[in-house]
Amino acid sequence: MSEKDDSSSVALFEVIPPFLCRPEQVARWQRAGESPTYKLLRKPNSLEELNSYKYCMAIWSENGTLTYLTPHGRDDYPRENALTLKYRGGGPTLHICGSSNLAINQTADYFMCLEKPTDESNCLRIESTRAFDFSGAGTRCLEHMFQVAPSRPVEFFNIDLSTQQSTILATRPHPVRLVFNDCELEDSGTAFLDALESYSSSLALLKFEESLPLDYRNLQRLLALNGVIDELSLPLLLDDEFALLPFSANVRRLEYELLASSLSQADLESLHIPARQLFIRIEDFDRDAFPTDIMLSFFRRLAHMGHFIELKVRFLFVDNDFAIPDSVIQELICTAHANDKLQVLDLCTQGEDLEWDPHVKTLCRGLQNHKALRNLILEVRDDAFGRNFCHLRKLLSKNRQIVVMDELKRFYTDGSSIDELYSLNKFYRGSADLEVTPLSKRSPLVATTLVRRASNSFRRTALLLSNHTDALFDLVQIAGLNGLSGKTSSRETTEETTSTRKRRRL
Image (cartoon, rainbow, N blue to C red):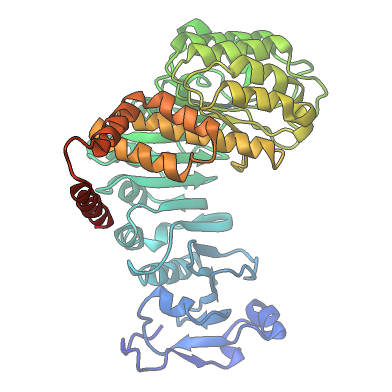
């Protein structure tokens, strides 16, 4: 790569003869007529300068690598084994191929360090189709990616990192969001944990998917951290000795997957979960019946703790034809009520997982008196809510604080009367939220709402005034004072009214 001139007045590319590239790498693109192969004549001003060309291209580098650059919105780069940098949020995708890992890493470092703070990117994904040793890229590119976008999530997929690189990730001066999917850390995470324990850094999100790159000693160290990690997500741990250990993590939000059999082998009475937001996936692929006793005991333990504000439950039982027992539904409802600050109950399922459809009526009835619950999330068919959505209608009429939605946050509705009920309840919630506002500021807000949003609706007027009788009294007093005549002449009254109107216009 040439860095002779940084000036934008110098051409960025020149087309190079095909014999300089490996034909098998570019033949497919060249046949499609979409990707001429270029050599850089100067260092690009930024990644955005490359992204601005808006078409696919292949960039040849003097170290023998070929970088397929795909602008934002396209996904037609080659699928051969290589290293891919995906800049989300409007950024490009760089697919780097080469004869050696060292050359690929050098090219990755070069392009990553081109990113400027002005470049749009809300996530960076570094991935490979199979395990790729990224250690040769060094630490400069990792430091740079956080300097230009400190708060963006960074995802590693099939990437092996060195101890120096994992230390850099753990010692940023601001909270970072890290996702490791099927990755490896050179020393099983020792340097990573050393850094987290020694520095005053913090992780807004630490997520491990598919596999855990930590040995069990470092897992224990991770879970013992206090106040360092905000959100923690862990994959399935097959060793029953450690299966319940993740519940002890001192984090705000915990996401974890475990086997139902792991719960049966533990003393649930001693289980402690500091997290206030719990997302638990319970799976079992060899079971021939629903683990009723296990789940009853587990929900009772969650009810005993009583501090959750968000609870997500997934049952991942594949290739079965059994249903969730009614007793488990009733226990789940009791658990929700025992957690009297619970705001979100998420029971979504996917694919061939167990269905909640037969229990929608029971859930709607059982949860209608929960004072804190705001979101009930289900993945069910519309007819699960009964004829004309009768079960949903009763729930929304009884509890004006709650909404029922699917996993994509779409409200369940009939498109007419249920929409009106949601709208009325939203008005009610807004009216109730005004109660904490001082009277001097609340009275004009109540008056404005009466005129603009409630004037044509008796129900909305009644709801608003029932929450703000003191504001109504204040408005009546003002109206009475403005209507006093006393000994004021009609001319004075007219002048006063005119003056008042002028002031109101101002």
